Image 1 (cartoon, rainbow, N blue to C red):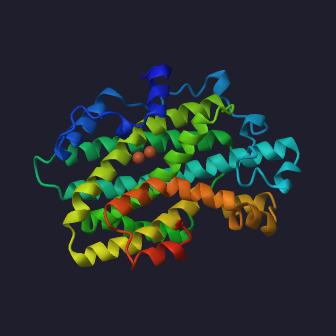
Image 2 (cartoon, rainbow, N blue to C red):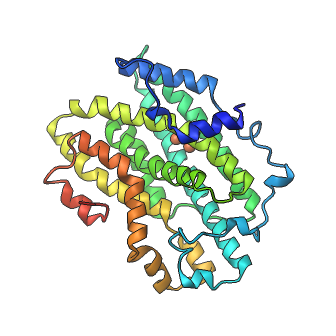
Length: 326
Ligand SMILES: [Fe+2]
Ligand SMILES: [Fe+2]
């Protein structure tokens, strides 16, 4: 089990931003290093979180769940006019919903990774790494579901269309892994960005949520690092047709993923009777929300630029998807 200090250090400096052991580290060496880190620095959802500790109990009226004014919905006058218990409950409901969406996204991810590993030849280092990642994501699935259960809120998770589309995504992991790994970044990058921002914000965070986020960002750093390096190595080798398909489909995937990860679900809107005008004020026409969404997607966008995927054909798709910034 990691000490709190070691965890905080890794939260501040993501894995891939730390100095590489050697400037000339090859792709295979990087994958082996990530696998080794999975052995020496990993977490168990039950051994490493003290779920029954007094400080980890969840009270839906706890003011620490309240959204701050830096949150899109939290900044609206409608939200600020709600009684304190309702403000706290909405905050907790949002967190539980993001965890449920997160664990379902990670379930799709795990099934895709297993499909990807299924076809790998003997002896390649990706096989071991991918299995480590599946194991870590399984721990995250346990951790997120346990949190959701302990909130007492019945969160429905992804809608029917998303569930149906998830089968296509899982299939892509075998036939078009490059697109699959952009889907992975589209889900993991925004979650990671939001969690790191929260941990760095200095706001008081409920100890259970803080522990979950610390564990998550520590392990996600490896997953993000692998996905980026896989794409850096493989996208330049794609034929022109696949390259075009990747450049056009990626912004569509990113826009949908960011929406799922950063906006309240239909259940929340219904249950708390949030007026359409408030949703529009918070998410539709709010330049600060747009800025936040673009910031969450900034790293993956930079990667697209680096790989030459922002072209005259694909740029209009980014614009239509509402995730383009000049
Ligand atoms: Fe995860
Ligand atoms: Fe992950």
